[in-house]
Every structure is written in C-alpha cells, then in structure tokens.
Figure 1 (cartoon, rainbow, N blue to C red):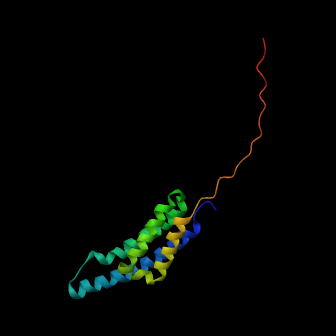
Figure 2 (figure 1 turned 180 degrees about the horizontal axis):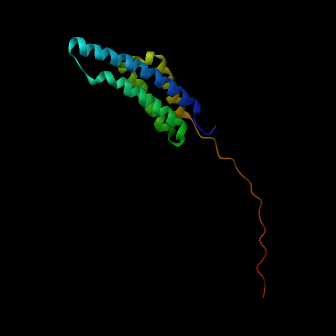
Figure 3 (figure 1 turned 90 degrees about the vertical axis):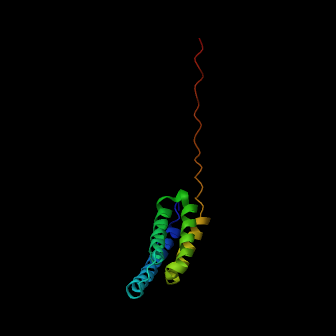
Length: 127
C-alpha cells in the first residue's frame, strides 16, 4: 500500500472523539461563563485539537510524503487532548496516539525494479 491509510483512519476517528470531548469541555466552560462569570479561551482548545487531529489524519492519506509531520502532529494533539478535551473520552486519545505512531514508523514500499531490454544501435555508416 502506497499510503498510510490505517494511520489516517485511526487518527480521524480519534480526532472525532477528541472533538466531541472538546465540545463537552467547551459546554462546561460556557456554563461557568453563565453562572460564575468566569471565561477562558482554554475551554475551546479541545475543539481546535480535535479539528487539527482530524485534518492530520486526512493529510496522512492525501499527502503521504509528509507522514512524519502528520504523525507528530497527531501525537501532539492527542497529548494536548488530555487536559483540554477530556482525552477524547480516552478512546480518542488512544486512537489518535496509535494512528500517529503508525504514521511515524510507516515506510513507503520500494519502487518496483523494471528491467528493460537493451536496444542494439546500428554502427555508424562508413564512408
């Protein structure tokens, strides 16, 4: 397979759970805003982490030459989801982490060696 599809799919699914966890965390932040008057943008970092994780998963499939960048981004966003997105209900954290690790260790298959037939070139004409 010429693309890290497994890594991309696991990362996208993990990013979805992180996004849902971030939405729950942001909802709690809005409740704090309405009841206590405390507002912080930190509550919305989980939403951004989930979106970036899903984008990294898609880019693993679309642009496989940069699989190490997308894998590292997925791992960082999975770690960032622990305090800011309830770790994606732990399932999102695990899936994004595994997808990022698979993307980091993935290697493109070697190009097939194509053997060509040697062509004989006629000798130059003699005068």
